[in-house]
Image (cartoon, rainbow, N blue to C red; front, side, top):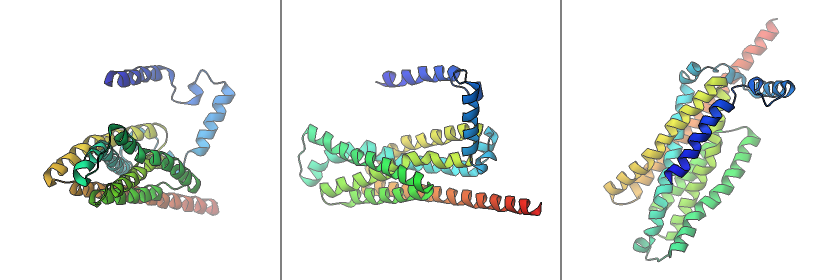
Amino acid sequence: MILMTGLPAVVVGVIAYFYITDTPDKARWLTPAQASAISAEIEAETDPQAKKHSSMKGAFNNPKLWLLAFASMGIIYGLYGVGFFLPTMIAGFGKQFGTNFSGMETSLLISVPYAFAAVGMILWARSSARRGDFGWHIMIMMMVGAFGILLSAYSSTPWMTMIGVTLCAVGVISSMPLVWGLPMRILSGTAAAAGLALINTLANFGGFAGPMLTGWLRELSGGPQLPFTAMAIILLLSGATFVYVQRVYRAEKATDIAAAKESVEAR
């Protein structure tokens, strides 16, 4: 299975390296007019703040990017923590609550949180795009996720546990598309590519640390309360970091706009 999922990605990556161009004007499948129109649209859509950080060095020297990378790691921590232990939690309902689900019923229960999360992800992304906000939309979903995982950890019925896990899945998964919006506001060009790669790399470390730390804390404490409380705290810290970075970005943008107006008036 690993080869079946990994090899196509490797092959496509090699093809993309030789086929995908860095800029529209280098794309041989575009006419000069099309390339010019796309370049103009990209230039118009690029945030002035992002143009300040367009080199790879500019990306790695940008503290906001590192904050976003570690905050994304916390979100992936929650995603994998729930994903890995949701089947175990449902399988443990029989011992904990005296219920007895068949294999089919267990599979259907596992799919419930992700079904709600799929709908929430689409609706929440639309809300974020309509309001031009990423930080608070992520923070709200992190609050939903933290509340949900705490509810599931301290609940006394299987249904309350399922509601809690569903809320956590909705919160974490609905924030995933928004994670990439804020970096594109503060980076452009080569810096954007390097920055997204850095965020993705560090975030995936959360996918390794999440299940491992959650399992270790569960064995240490003998129950889900400690690991899921830690997960809730990490989710809230991640959301708060996105809000902070967005606030800094907006403050810097307002300063630049004010400076530009003063420069025009001085002339």
